[in-house]
Amino acid sequence: MANPKPYIDVQNLTKSFGAKVLFQDISFSIAEGQRVGLIAQNGTGKSTLLSILMGTEGKDSGEIIYRKDLRTGFLTQSPQFNPKDSVLEACFNHQGSEEKLLKAKQILTQLKITNLDQAMGELSGGQQKRVALANVLITEPDFIILDEPTNHLDLEMIEWLEGYLSRGNKTLLMVTHDRYFLDRVCNLIMELDNNTIYTYTGNYAYYLEKREQRMENARAEIQHANNLYRRELEWMRRQPQARGHKAKYREDAFYELEAKAKQRIEDRQIRLKSTNVYIGSKIFECQYVSKAWAPDKVMLKNFYYNFARFEKMGIVGNNGTGKSTFIKMLLGEVLPDEGRFDIGETVKFGYFSQEGMKIDEDKKVIDVVRDIADYINIGGGKQLTAAQFLQHFMFSPEEQHNYVYKLSGGEKRKLYLCTVLMRNPNFLVLDEPTNDLDIKTLQVLEEYLQDFPGCVIIVSHDRYFMDKVVDHLLVFKGGGEVQDFPGNYTQFRDWEQMQSQSTVNNTITTEKKEKSNYRNDQKRKMTYKEKQEFEQLEKDIAQLEQEQEAIEQALCSGTLSIEEITEKSKRLPLLKDELDEKSMRWLELSEL
Image (tube, rainbow, N blue to C red; front, top):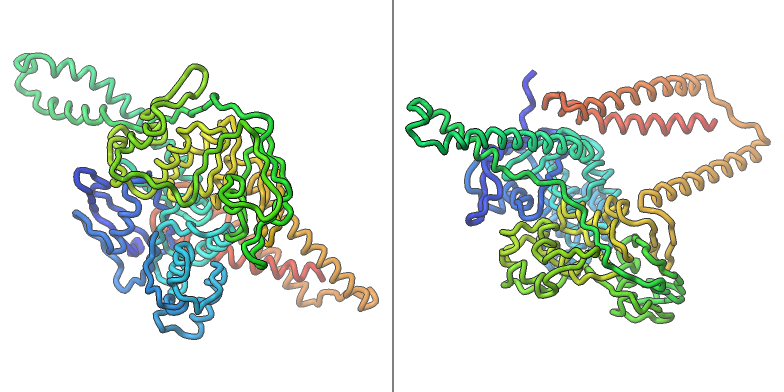
């Protein structure tokens, strides 16, 4: 049987901006049922590649072939709408069946857009992006391209979207820095690195493992080439007459070897540990603080908290529950209605805000940082120059001498982060620091914060990042309610699920007792037919679980053909749905 025809086939695609080559002669295809995550450093062309595939950006050369009659849906980072259109009009452009209208309302509700008659011009940028996301999902395209779909979503929305995109046989290509999202949704990872595309057939965890193997192999090849190069260089340096007349092939091979030997593979990053930070034992005390913007918009209600030395706290909660307001009150930018913040004398805040900072776009990157400090003291008699610090956060020497206006959005956010850290604060307050940062920068920042000898507060929807850095949570529930939880985000979610299951079990027990009392303790027994169904369900569930395990192992093996991957990727979500359905029925019958 022939391989299935791909939804999209990209052949020898090249794109440059001036002298900078983003990618050269890259080729890849995406087949039905493949959910692809695209990973690359900021400024290397992720969003440009998506824009080219969407037709909103031109290419230098190459071919992009979509399957005939393929219905596609695109989510851009900054969608544009007619500001006079209502939310529903923006979704349907005045058209849509009753069935689609119902689906639109369901999806918009999940994305916390409830006023469907509101004009688009009245919505925030984040709300507009959520309407754009809903628009893509409502139309049910064959192939979806998503640029940072989790930006502007709260944790509930992200987890809902994870489940939505994982169900059924959806085909998609997306750029996201949310590593749990990549892990749980994608079955194929494409990495854009060194102007080339590398493909890994598996989720994000599989990609990490196989990428390290690729880097080790590349390092070994370059080391081998260097050893040969030194020997061949001696031969090339001899007088031409001493080489002989039949050595043209050897000269050609030398230049190929030289190119290989001079390749640069990223070295394992040395962790940047700052020990030159002092903070006293008194940090801050939040003394019975209350804040409300309106009677129905209560942010905090008589809230008390005493922040400990060296604490690394995460703040989570849905949009609009008061997270950023709390931060701004701590920093003195917003005054509480009641109560006060008592802050220690040694505390020196470093604040990274969602809004960012205004940077002179006509300055060079290195000058922006040098305006703050020429070097940063990291303790132990050591210091890093501004250039060394920037290089640690992956601004190459060439990029450091670029003008700010040439940077991508993600690179500007990264530069802003460097300006905050270069001030050498002892208390970092980071409000959504992960938005628009690439995964490699996030890994460097995670290590920096893990080793940071001061205090940290992070407001973030990035669950992976929070799990890596924080050891304590404040959970903003809304209506002024704040829960204090001693653990990271995954531990909190596990605890929540245990609480929820406990509540369900208590409800079931209560209902069973009520039924038992009502029936004078004469519990209804299974009918003969139900017994047969129950026994068959046990067999079916066991078989389905075995099949599911076998498919998951096969998909992670890296040995399947594209045809086999497509077939198994299509089967897996259907299998999970069937397993869920049969398990629920088994539970119902087991209660009899």
